[in-house]
Each structure stands twice: as structure tokens, then as C-alpha cells.
Length: 95
Image (cartoon, rainbow, N blue to C red; front, side):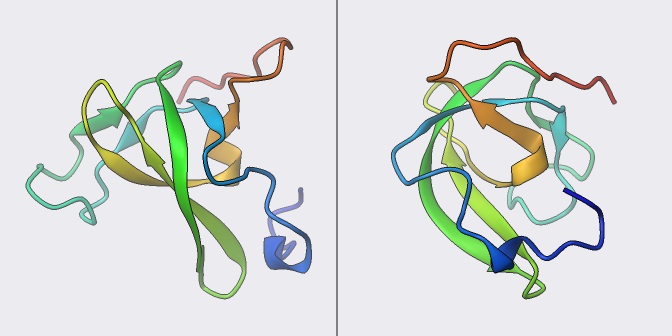
């Protein structure tokens, strides 16, 4: 998907209840209450379940992912996730 492409022009990639894996380190950008800005919320490879799907800036899907190990529910972009149900090689990026 190109940067200027509007995700909302197509259906969401993930479904509610789907098991997903984090592809990028997710840090608090100030929108996660009770944690310091910059604090790591989810590490590469962490697994969670999509609990709801919302939108951001009328262009992107935001998946609320419930990580059972930490109890956190974190909003994630499509590019930060991959299915944990499929058997394929990971596209993990280290940033």
C-alpha cells in the first residue's frame, strides 16, 4: 500500500477476533493513558486479538488489539500487524 493510499477504500485486512502479531515495536505516542511517552507497549512478535476496528483521519483503519499477556488494548495500524493464524514467513521490520 502506498503512503497516500486511503485504506478505507477497501475492506479491513483483519477481522474482530483474529489473532495478530506485531511487526514493529510499538511505543506510547502519548495516547495510551498511565504510561510515559516513549514507553514500549508491544514488542516485535507479541501476539494479541483484534477487539474492535475504528478509523483515523478518514483514511486508515485502526485495530484495537488486546494483548493478553500485558492486558493492554493498543490501537495499531495495518502496517504494524500481521496475521498470527497464517503459516508464512514474517515481514518483521526493526525500527
